Image (cartoon, rainbow, N blue to C red; front, side, top):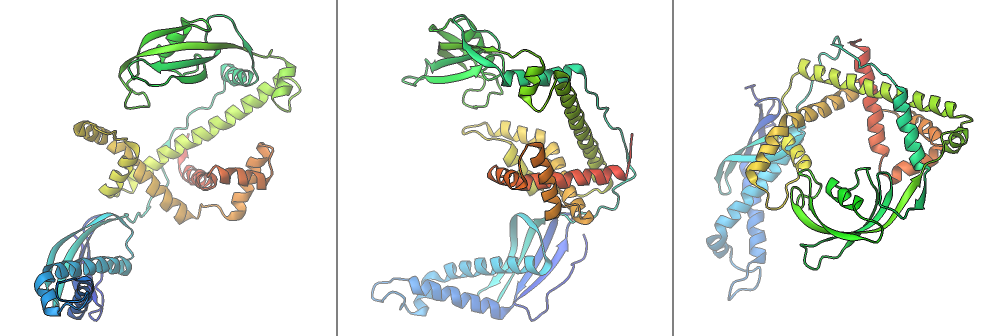
Length: 422
């Protein structure tokens, strides 16, 4: 345990001594000047008296002696609460603490109107010192673009340009179907209409298998089991009896793979030009993903080389965000889930803190001019002006996340340039 850092001047209403317990825990020992205690108690007593109603007295005119006899403990409690809150705020101000979680108050020593001292334990964001950010060795994944990868993208383009035609037959993979589904066990539950492509993962396997057995206009009742990881916790892992009606089947007519198709996709004269452009984009994406993978490996190395502890409350806050707790869930099961993902969440917390420090220390955030330049490049690729792309991203609330992503890219490049990446 380190010695107390500094102490406020003796004339201050709050005398605060702070002790660094570890990277994230600070112990504050606060003593309140007697004059401040007496003044605070007078204020609280006046507030209680102002709102007190007793038979025989007008509101706010009850004698102080009677107010003290009846409400003395409440006045003391309110005095302590008010001074503890003010003392904590003063300690945070004096020592410039970046607090996280809730403070824990203990060892309250109070004499009405004369003295008050207490202890507060509070978690803070650790001050990270990045003594080493380079000299690491990591492998960079090879970036390869196969013809099959290009074919997959081209096939997606074909589906996007497909023409739907009614089909008077049983459906198959790739067909777009319109169905109505009703839960037979749901009492008077109404049927719900759906429209989706078969074989594309929009429906659970048992529902798709049922649809494959129907012709347009037919319906049937089927026993369906929902996957354990189904999005709705109410349905996940359950077996239901569903009535499924197939209303319509439309077949997707894909365009021919020729030069005309390529010109319809974009500014391409031939199919070969389209394939070359797709291959170039896939390679560029692969290079970016490889840089990200290398950057994450180097971040792990930086975290290991500059070890620090993170506040448990910060990890707990992240866990609350990533683990959904359905109503009536088994507490032991939820606690087990939290323990299982806690190491990954702690790594994520450390990652975010190290990136924040790295970006700040090295001045890697983008200036307004640099950000506009990157936005212009993005807009040019999408055929939009800077103003149009900025408005579009603002509507989607993506401006700040995009700026953050650009800064992280710079941080990864900084780390890569300082290490041996092979």
